[in-house]
Length: 150
Image (cartoon, rainbow, N blue to C red):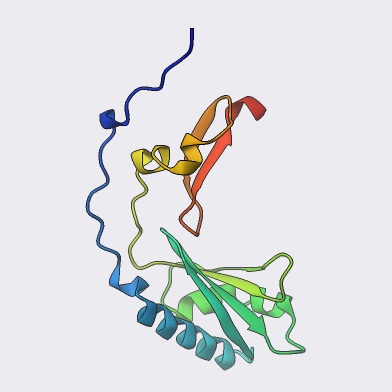
């Protein structure tokens, strides 16, 4: 006998989410320039080449000027957080690219609803035998794992 998933109508509908004003394109651009200024204050020259807002954090990709060591920028994470008035800051090299990722928390966290993930195309088309919806990536894509493979 084939198992049939319960209907999604048992799960709450996502509320009409008003995007946080701090995530508007202009606000993100302004934050990127502010971050460049903060880094320059600490002697790190470079350019923010890409900004990726997510539900909880925003990733700023820094292309450092020639001669700037990644370890120097990584070591400034606490100072960057303090200067950007953020509770925390995570800094790491972006694999396969000449960029350093700087993650700063959004002013307001976006709630990720289970129904939203389970109704996603990724969840509907997964080939997982025991699919588990975990949340969203920084890009807002559904994260689904197969418990059977764990």
